[in-house]
Length: 107
Image 1: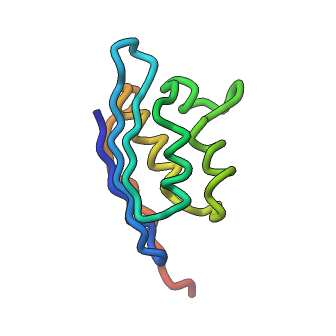
Image 2 (image 1 turned 180 degrees about the vertical axis):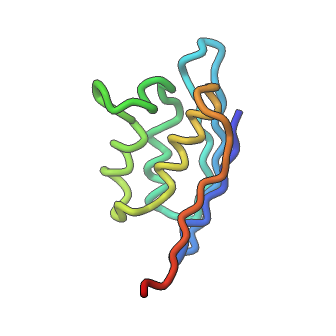
């Protein structure tokens, strides 16, 4: 199981998600709670995903990223990427580690 919290920045629409592998070792359940209506709509279409498909750009690619294209009007939203990372961790294909994007004033 992996639990992630995303504070996406200026919009302030926080998202929390729990991902958990099913017994088949391939299917990952997603439980997403978000203040963002676009993320909520995206998550409605993603009760489960194939963990191995999510972490690859081969074949049809990530269902999470495809759903984000359909439902999330902001391409830079960090939530879809965080969900893919959570699936990766829940499936044992990555270790849990925080991810940071830091902005600094350019010189």
